Image 1: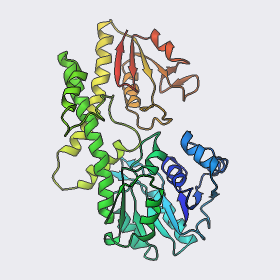
Image 2: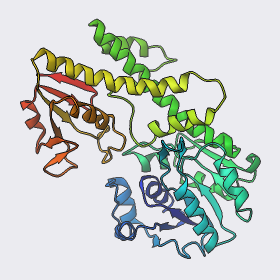
Image 3: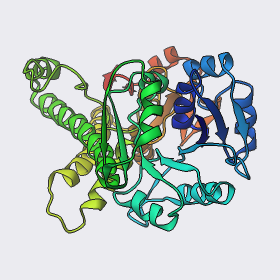
Image 4: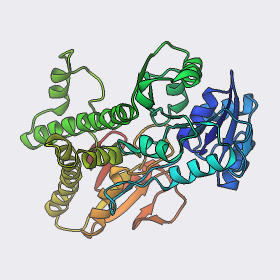
Length: 375
């Protein structure tokens, strides 16, 4: 099969790389510089496994104009940021991609991998009846995207009335080196699975963060309590590390979109998860300010990294960004160690060249560990 990957970002490159062994892949993007990088086997997201796959295999890169004429399937992997103004995802890039595909090839199948509001795929499909549409949500972890494409936890395929998944089923099954369960369902069910999955993960992060807040305020050892709680096999000893809040590109926006999707349907938990994340960041800020007050005023506060995972090069929606913004307004002096940034300053924080320079601070916030160190 000849597959067009629309969008050379984190998801698109990982998905496309997973097909290189068995299929013809065409990477398509509106950004010429990004296409030039991909053509050389380089990635704008600095992901070594993906770069190694691109350098070892053959593929094409094209601009959108007439880029789909000889392709069998187009997989849309463009960003869908949450618009606070609209109260839902901005699907502008998805709409542009679909229109471009339709203009180039009236018969090509279209798979939407971008995360969309529930009901979006069906609405788009109704506007373009010549195309077979599919919703195949991604469940990728930062820094492990290609691994998750090759060994997925599950493959969800949303199609019209949950039928006729055909070649799309075979395509994604062929890329999986393990034998995951493949769930074929309706568009809306596939979209719901993605949003509820990420909101559950956000809820789990929020739970252990609130446990940490309680234990710390009471003078208990949070790790002892977490370990004891997690020994229950129904809970499990995983995804249970306190942090400064859930962040990254997906969890914040997907939980907000799910809340928006509820509309008039009764709910309490989803909005509580979102509110809890704001509260957690306030707790961290207040701990720093209490230490400043105890020391009689202005103190030096160090931020150790913005990224939330080892190996990641992205700090989009990192909770550390909100914490820095809040601390900036309090008058404390901020210092930041983040190797991904150049010398100078960032959001009012002076950039440090080495992690050891943080030892000159009074308080250090370790983003990767979710810990506050008081010196």
